[in-house]
Every structure is written in C-alpha cells, then in structure tokens.
Length: 203
Image (cartoon, rainbow, N blue to C red):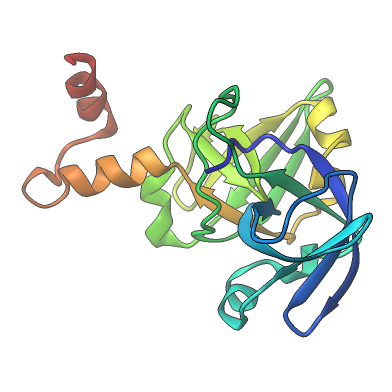
C-alpha cells in the first residue's frame, strides 16, 4: 500500500528487456515493493547506489512507458506504524489518462485529464485520483475527463513540469470509489453520488 506522496525523483539509468534500473538516494532491499510512476514493482537487484525493478510484458503494455526515462517518481511501500498521509493507493494502474488541456491560472495550473469512458464513473468531485503515483484531488468531473488544480510546488517537484497536451499518464482511480460503485450497482444502479454521500453520513 502507498500514500501517493512522492518521496524522491529517481534517475532512470536503463530499461533493458524487462529490467528498469534506477539511481536514487533511497536504498531498498531485494523483494521490496516500490511504486515507480504509480506502478507497484518489485526490487530484484541492488547495488551501492542503484536498484532494478522488473516489468512484465503485460505491465509494459499497460503503463505509459514513455515516462520511464529521465526522472521518475518513486515511493516505497508503507510500513506498519508509518504516518498515514495522502490517500490509500494500491499501485495498480487502472488505465492510461491523457493530458487534454493545460490552463495557467497565475498561482496554480489546471490540468484536464481525459480517460476511457468505462473509468469515468470512478472519478468523483473532490475525490482522490493518482496520476503517475501523485495523490491529487479531483476539482471537477466532465463527460470524459476531469480537472485537477496543481500548485507551483507540486509542478516543480514532480513530472507535471514536463507534461504537455497529449502526454500519457498512469492513472489509478480511488479504491473506495470502485468499492462503493460495485456495492450499489445492479438494483441500486439509479443511486447518484449524492445519494451515496447521504447513506454514508448515517454511519
């Protein structure tokens, strides 16, 4: 489990066959789980200042592999007793999103992200979403996209500073949104998110 708070920007040294080798201050152990651009991967090799994770062919087909170059986001898996920040992130990428519009608002920047239609139902206004491993709040949900408002600090310290219109990103929807949707589908398929909020408020 992860929190969606980036601990370090690691440097990609190589991506050969299925092995991604990174240089970082963080020193994992073999077998550790670490989120790289939001995807939970297993450390299979370590050296004094580098480590390697293995990407299966399926992972390489699902992930935005063009972002696994230069710098990448890394976050070690949470340990029992760690301070809980951000939101619950599984490191299981649901789909690829696409940066569709970028609007500078002076002290913040709006990023609009489009995604496949079958996943928009898991995007909730003021809910959480993970973009390349970064935990963010959804400000607005549109028909086939959603809007994020990003502050300068986040842009300068993450991959958001290199995102352009058309950039593909790893996207993980909110785990609780997926669970709630599946709990209330079927006979209760006419429930709105407002109805669900009212139900949850009773407990």
